[in-house]
Image (cartoon, rainbow, N blue to C red; front, side, top):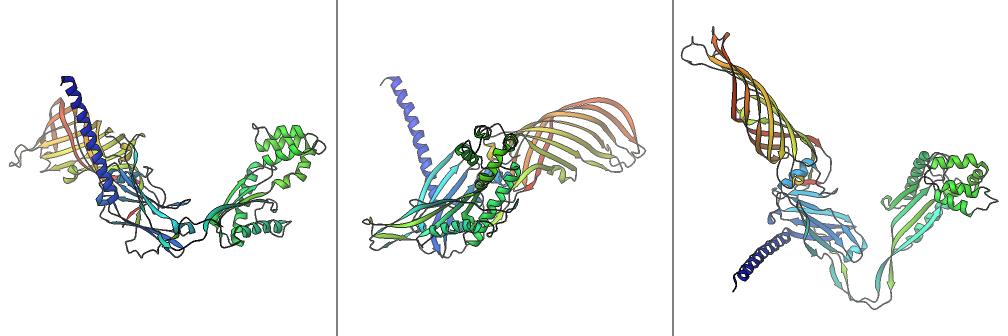
Length: 571
């Protein structure tokens, strides 16, 4: 075999082995994903349907920067109902969500758990209003893995909650949609939004929509899905006032219908249009020259897009007052109307041979006994307060404040202050140091958008300025002997490297070390008269290069709590 052919086969053989290994790893992850759901079922309880899911998060290893989301959905042939999702988060992703709430993972009413939490197995129960189509529904549970770079739908498992009941059928029941569209004109008191049935023809107009609702729900085979009302106002008066009045009148009409016609307010949708210019343009277009001598001029003004509604009305009223008066009398009242649309479902019996001799019936919900889900609240981190535990161990005062900056979660600035200030042995010994400084840090690592701020590997540069007084007793056995020491000021610049971990919802632990250069004047002295006087001996300039700082810091995160009730918690 030629040498080059042998090398080619060896190369492709290695690639095949790597590909097989990756496929095997992916299949293992898929198998783990299936095992994370230990139970999933749905059942009917009176006028409600309950979805119950039990998870075993320990069956799946979620990476620190990953999230596994469980999406339960009730699905039928033409309908579906999405239930709140469950998000199982890795360590970094969990703390990122808990401290910043900016991952975009969670919708209101979704639930969040950490895969390392102690509450296992995790129980999920949601209740929704039962609808007739749910008799033939299935519970579909989709698992979706998300990391820094992509979203991967790993597997989808179908659990069939409906029970198949055998019985002969002679007809097919089809659920069809129906719609009723009409218009009504309600007269309101001047500049008011209350509805008065006795005013003008209001009662006749209200009876029109009442009959439409009764027709849409004339038998038990029909169910109203929604009532959509869109109110219109005429283009007269200030636009801002018309906008507010049209909205208030439309909401008032929706509340009146819900209250008097026993229609669920959640099924009523309202919209409004401050001024119906399209209706005005249509009226002017159909009018004759005898009715509107300046019809073309009015039409040109009404169609101009560069003018505000108030400016259009001003020009029409000012230039053509007689024509505008005609519009006020014969057109404007008809523009103060409300269009409504009723959408409903109806069951129709279609005469055709049955495709099956079975129907589905959702089983009754089983009584579930599990802990109460207690929501926690995430917060938005602003800055961090820090203390060096090495200084704290010797009761030396110190403090730091660090603030993240920029949009890439990569930079932060820090200010620090130390002041160990000790004197003992009758002033013959002293350790006094006062330092103030600042530091700029860069945080390394990929996927910073999924890691909590101020965690991970970092490096920085610092500048510090301070003063000191170090005195020691050369012969502490002789009480009459005084100490010798050095005083001075210094500047320091250098570099810092370290690592920080999240250890609690508001705490980090940070390790860091710095190297750099110090320089400044040094004054050598001897203590006299029981160290009540310092005698200067000489002054020099000191310079030092090497390790300058060592820290084991406890970091306390400060921020504002956010009230997202029911989004996150534990059993």
